[in-house]
Figure 1 (cartoon, rainbow, N blue to C red):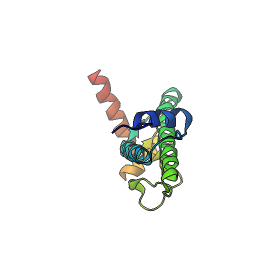
Figure 2 (cartoon, rainbow, N blue to C red):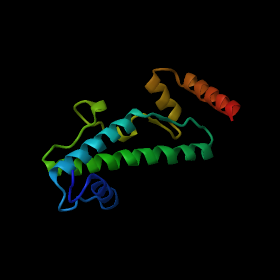
Figure 3 (tube, rainbow, N blue to C red):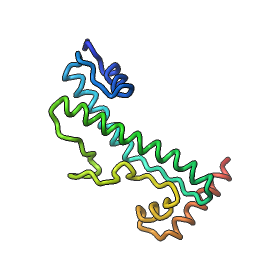
Figure 4 (cartoon, helix red, strand yellow):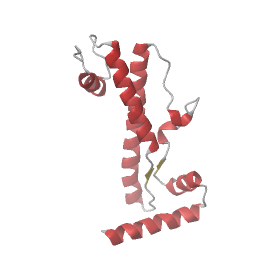
Length: 145
């Protein structure tokens, strides 16, 4: 279908200016909103685990974890911007049910100095077992390299 402002142009405008061009049709807004919701759901289902204990490695994990967290927050902001234009309430991703928890954007992200504890809680295992898993994963990775 031919639109004055198509989905690609709308996404470009959202990511660069956080704005909806004035001539954008409601149908295009709905299409892009659905695509962004799917993208956010996919990002929230992906786990990021960076188990490290030395400062340099922990800082490397911060970069990856914070990048993912900011990406999730920006996506939800864009989804809500589009939803407001369509007359919807703020979006709550499926994984959270009825309410958005305070630290929702960190869901499935285990990094930083508390990564071992966070990972252990998510797996319902002890912190020491999480440490063993981290060491085993590093050993396997080094053998494969």
